[in-house]
Image (tube, rainbow, N blue to C red; front, side, top):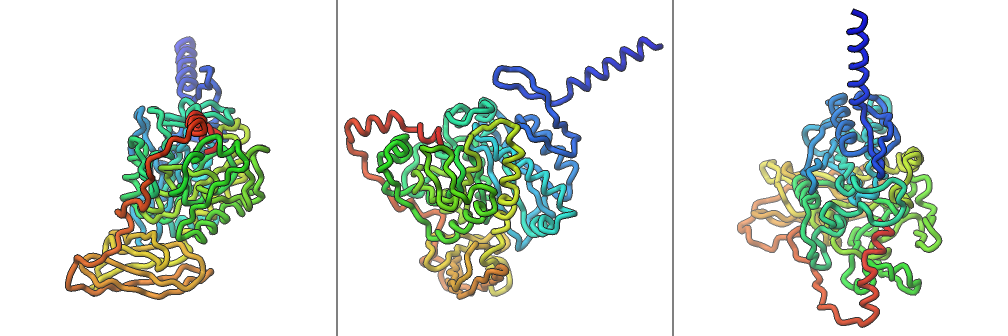
Amino acid sequence: MLLPNILLLIGLCVVYALAQPTTEDYEGVAQPRIYSPDSQTLDYVYHNHDEMTRFLRATSARHPNLTALYSIGKSIQGRDLWVMVVSSSPYEHMIGKPDVKYVGNIHGNEPVGRELLLHLIEYFVTNYHTDPYVKWLLDNTRIHILPSMNPDGYAVSKEGGCDGAQGRYNARGFDLNRNFPDYFKQNNNRGQPETDAVKEWISKIQFVLSGSLHGGALVASYPYDNTPNARICRSSALCAMFQSYSSTPSLTPDDDVFKHLSLTYANNHKKMSRGVACKSAFPAFEKGITNGAAWYPLTGGMQDYNYVWYGCMEVTLEISCCKFPPAQELRRYWDDNQLSMIKFLAEAHRGVQGFVIDASGIPVERASLKIKGRDVGFQTTRYGEFWRILLPGVYKLEVYADGFIPKEVDFVVVEQHPTLLNVTLQPGKRSDGPHFRPFVAPPHYRPQPERDQGIFSSISNGLNGLYNSIFG
């Protein structure tokens, strides 16, 4: 009986060993991993797609009252685009409480944000019952976290690669952060499954605030990313090479709010607000923030699309000078960004919020709203809810809806708490009046055909994309 028992024991050990998660480095040598799905602690290493999936599923199973896991679609190579909701109401929208989101790893070779978002999930679920601030945030907000928008690009990226473009693009070679409809220029890039999934996602959920995590610099960059006047140097290495070149800021009607949101992240970060340049040849950013177009213009960016099409205020967060730093540095990045990531989400509770209803008290869905003097609008949810992040001041809200008389309401925003504002619309005699349509308006600028710029244009075209491979 002894020999069969020994053989059985050996067999169980082999099965256990084979079941432990491993990852392959770029040369194909298996590396031991600390993380396992039943572990209560997420280790500070890079997790491949299967390991990330196991962590998300295990966390959802372990914390069913705080998390819900869903996929918004698949990548080119069939990997799920997982989203984890973290909230005290994870499976259904909380009436009157905003939805916010984080998106990581849109460029596959910039995975620090991917790992930090996994740690943010773990931090929320493990501190909900002991940290009053975390409990307040999860009780009053639904937080949607997409750790990896580009899992195919990540799969071919290499740890330790601080620069370059290997893994930046999706499996078809498209830059996903140049793949959205653009407010200023026609974007002729063919839509990709990953981008289409995100567009469908944000069309269904009225997100109020969003952060997109990147690498390659240390700065919070806010809209607009593009400008109607960007020509030759719009995304080439020449923009960095010629010091005399200076991009022009492209400011939104909510520039004060975007600067505030960016400063919220930078000031709570351990280094970002110092405005330290990653390399001597790179720009230093005052207070750790920049307007996107002032840094370098790009067409088809995700943050402009969120803002113009759906009224969601998104900021691009560049959180590491090295795009794919060694794993032993991940703990330091978490320490640097932890407070910023939490405080940034809480800004969704600043400004004005309320409901639009009819005379019978029924919610008015998809009513169009804008703050007078700020021409980028937003809409109500199916429950008639709306939110708008604003700084303290006096404002006028304009409300339009088919079949109702347009209405204007004055209100005041204070620093201490959001202003609660409910608007009742009265039925109108006609429904074909001049209604505000913030999301279907065509871009207000169409560029003229490019003129031949001679040798300068040839050099620019030849180096186009190099600047993108340097920065996020």
